[in-house]
Image (tube, rainbow, N blue to C red):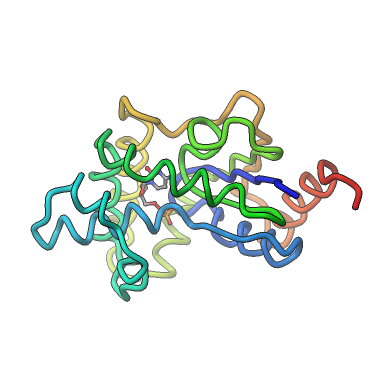
Length: 199
Ligand code: CDP
């Protein structure tokens, strides 16, 4: 069975948690596409040229321990605005989406650009304040600075010319501002279960 679930949305909306739960529940392969951009960003911070780093991305780049920091997120969103970086990562993501048995990909442009024909498209969002608070619980630091970085990243991701962050026209919106993570996961699982072919 080829079955693709596309989960998009802004930073710290809950995409990762929902995607992992979906993968575990249905036995789908899961790709956190943000990790690809974070890994490219890390190589660029080390002095490489962005397009070359994206074309040469290796599995060990994705295993770096420092990809989850706020700085790595900012570096990711900078390189993610470059068309040659995005172009270098398209084929890998599209192949992954066709993993036999089903796949869930989370990111910014999965339902709009990478997999416009995905069987299920979810757009997971929450207020900037809620998302910044969640990110702050993970990273610590100055809460005002974390909120500023979330807003800056939203603006860059939504404002870029190539594959800007926006919901696909046929995406199901899940606003997690006032939803528990259990309730958000339940919404996502229901949407998918309703569209899965009967086996
Ligand atoms: O975990 P969080 O939502 O904060 O970030 P992420 O999903 O790891 O993505 C980091 C950055 O990579 C984002 O701010 C985007 O600029 C970029 N990205 C993208 O452009 N397209 C994707 N499919 C995934 C991430």
